[in-house]
Length: 285
Length: 214
Image 1 (cartoon, helix red, strand yellow):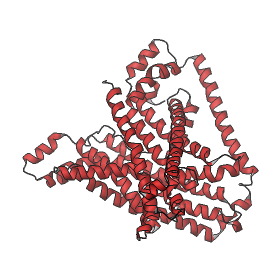
Image 2 (cartoon, chains in turn yellow, blue):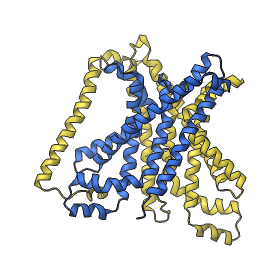
Image 3 (cartoon, rainbow over the protein chains, first blue to last red):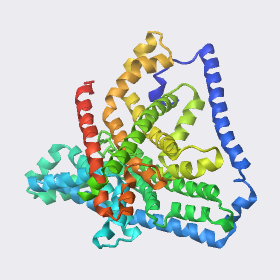
Image 4 (tube, helix red, strand yellow):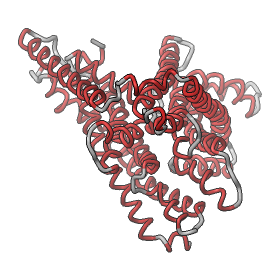
């Protein structure tokens, strides 16, 4: 029983214990029924037959899935690096002393946060050719991921820098540091440590969003799943392939999420790191 | 301009589809999300575990994959449902996990004294939650809750990839008539900006009006 929830109810007496047990049993029954129905339908439609899973033994199929995984990770890696760079640049712009730079960066951030990522990717992949610029699916995915997540990360960075107590920058200025020195030597090192969990959670979002490449036929995992799943010579094993791909995606995201949780716990334990009020993660979903 | 005015009925009905998807999924995800949050703080271990498992699973699954399952797998496994409805189900199930986390965060901001006082008055768990804690929690989480719903609005475009009739697919209709896809997509982007701005303004307003000093 975790501490913050225990306050909502009293220690159960005999009657409440019986009621809770009943509720627990009913919950378990409902969950079991839902899982059971899915398994029953899977079996009834032949998705659990040996024939539907044969593909997993073929080397070509394994290589195709591996290829999809590599493409997913490639888009994620380039997107993450570029988004971090763009986010840092935009955050610096928003914190600048020049008002034109500030409003320019704010405009960019607001623009790319408001436009759906799918529409951004469509713009690059389907839209650009009509003005004579061909963009590869990979470039379209990475550009989309960079612009959107860069804008979100800019907000995270800005919140982190603003959360450093004023006295820090005042002391740094008093020591004679310039603006760039204050930022580089005093504010950023403190801000980054407190922002790290939020940054990693945003990277989980970026990883999940890389699956949108599927919609513009970038050959990532989900695309390979559909390709293999509609292959008649394999018996069109769409659902079995999708299940395997789902496990891969969820495993990847869980690893990153676990990293974020671990960083958060470490941050909380370390008295040297400022405890920033958990910054609202703007576009988590 | 031709691209827009030549296809105005198409543009408007498609955005109508987007708004329909959004409103239905928003309502469903809010209800399911609050129920999940209640499950996660309930005295029944089985409910807590179910809620936690659901949220962990859905939060770590790409939305595209969720819709992939519903659009391509559901009909194969169960029975026929129109794509629109399947998209609503997929979007709601996905968004509910985020709503749950936000609401649960709100519950922990309500000071312990409130719940203790409610218990001292003899209220049970469900009464403490629905009468005392949730009304205060929801106020403090209005801004992040609106953020989740704005994300949902933008996520409806993912359904375009699964031939649901909504704004993301507008460029295809334009393309068939030989219009510029780039211009069509820019109009769609503008449409979304126009839809998101009132929600952001609403968020600021609610934040100001509903934030309670504690």
